[in-house]
Length: 438
Image 1 (tube, one colour):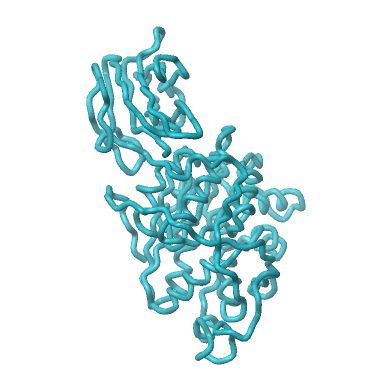
Image 2: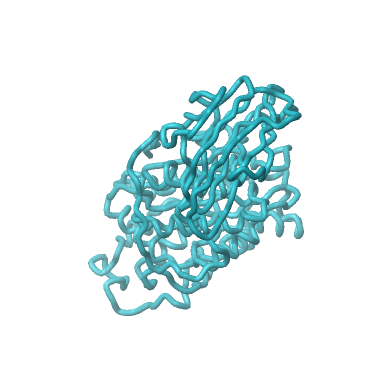
């Protein structure tokens, strides 16, 4: 398994048109084989029976890796039935599996928050669900080169996710992308940013397969319902770990102590293993049917649940945009968890402004726990639209956050200015980047 580091790359993925289907139904038997109301078992090139007529050797299928081991945690049929909420159209995923079986290079990417990053898994690098589920591909397809990209960043939602998607994921031309933001999304616009995220991935030139991974917490707070609506609309595969937690608590088959950290939010090793088990059980189901189930080519529906205004989004760093004016600010390295750290900062309460032409824009700033950061007013074309509080004293740790500046249906030019609030409590203020959508 090759780990690809996330470094600055000037490759830009050009959006192209892709294809979509109708909802297919998963019948779980044995290894939970995928059956489809729209998949046709017809006498075609995909008919199983002999190796010559098979997409993948029956011997390879028979020798596929088992789902991720969950140790002492018992995984029931009900958990699997609940967790594999919707298989979706498997055209793209089966194509990826066929290519892997032929020894090609496959790139699997994960984008999400701290759970995807591996928080509270130990050791983090090899016990997080992302690594564990990618290991199934490596074990099942030993002749393939499996590239692993983990673009999880703690305390980030799908707004930041869709803006950093190009630099952090699409630049690597992934073949499969797993999205996870159900624990961190809560703002009113996150339904639109998540739908835009899914669509941006599906519409990317590489035409990757997509899995919507829906996670939850001990108190069952999550955005899984809203995310499931977007995933079902696009007919992408949906794995609902949040629903497994909820059902387990109700029927007494699963407690938070079995899978979660005492903080009530992050999975412990058992939870990461269970998430990976659901994903790899789904992979087993898909692979077991690859020689018999035929799916129509996937088409992305033009009909959307929201305005989906973030499909062509980007996150601009100091190397990408020059302020029209700045006094007291300087371009500098910001110690955030973002993949690029070139931003702007002041230690004297300076001012800075940008001329932006886009349909939406936001400011990504750095919150600190040291009590040194202050409050800044954000002006758009001379009108104060919001105030940023970068003081996170008493918080869990310094991190990046954002505010929206404006959002329109069409691209327009606006002047964004940042000035210290009259009652600012600190002189330090750092800007990590500028979110834009075209």
